[in-house]
Length: 222
Image (cartoon, rainbow, N blue to C red):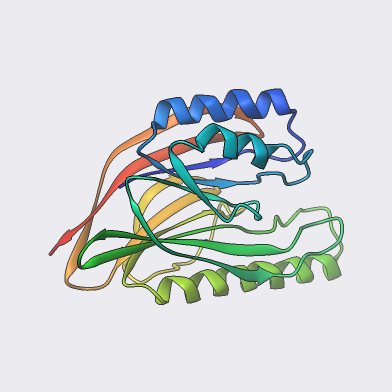
């Protein structure tokens, strides 16, 4: 399964969003899965509408009412989907955060979960009270992400972690798919299978310091 992560930033002009989305979809192709962040977050509410139109012939949009949708290509069997609240918002600092989940049946004995989320940022110039509130919310999101990974035998979690150092393990035995600082994707599987990562790629974007990162993930017999 080829998986891509891309963050489309806040306050982005529509034309810039479209240019970067098209660049990603052209590079990744119609058979890739895409985990996106910051769709319609602090932007005019056109991004999801544009996204749906762009992929209506190729992908299911899972979590279309969230800022972290997952695009699942039609050739993959979408077995289930779930949106789980992860933390409450904090005025001026973060909206409510969720874990968006798509379960994909890759074979008769292999279902993988894709978990997509975005952690609140922890600015330097905030009061101790706000820092603690945001720290608590970040802990809540990590806890919710761990809970969802433990519900599945195999999968890949994807997140804008807003964390450059000290990020903890989410799933036991996880293996790095892509790691671009705050943007991370890691795959896991229970004993009895192994994970292989191949064909890592990057697509240069022009939004908020984020590029898109992708790789092919294989879950195979041990």
